[in-house]
Image (cartoon, rainbow over the protein chains, first blue to last red):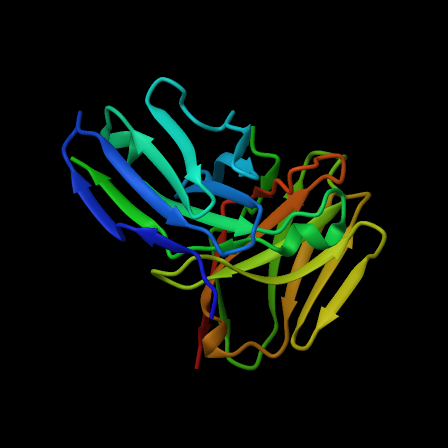
Length: 119
Length: 114
């Protein structure tokens, strides 16, 4: 039963601390997405990677957020320093995107999320 | 700039009745639309999709309607069941985007009462 895993599931930290969230995409998927869920914005796309290369990180606050894929089995999202307004649920999703095929658009499989609380 | 909008944060429906969830979009380049369902403490899961070449797609109790001229889509659930209680997200994409990028709405929380 292939699924996206995320760690930690819950994180409480104090303002100014560094936070690292990890994601293991489904084996064989070539695209990894990071989203943030907030009440006001819903699901916001922060960044995404294709074959480990960053495609778009325009949704991410550049000064404090960074996203990387050290290898095909691990994606990380780091916040340094964290602020109370970063409190949200962060989702990782992976998919097998085949160019312009419409079939590619429904192949995003989400992890269970990391609930981040910054005090 | 919210390109995909779900203006109803919540909806309550009686079991057995129809649930209608609405979604509006502003970007005329969007040509593929999806609905995702999310239970508490879980990630969203894909429910149903529609291409802009169609105006209706049906899958069991779930039907999605697309009105391109109005830039509006809706999800109909008939009959509604208590297990359908969840947050529903509408998402859109453009085929000129090679990355499979989706733009999501804010979500609508559906509550189906027995």
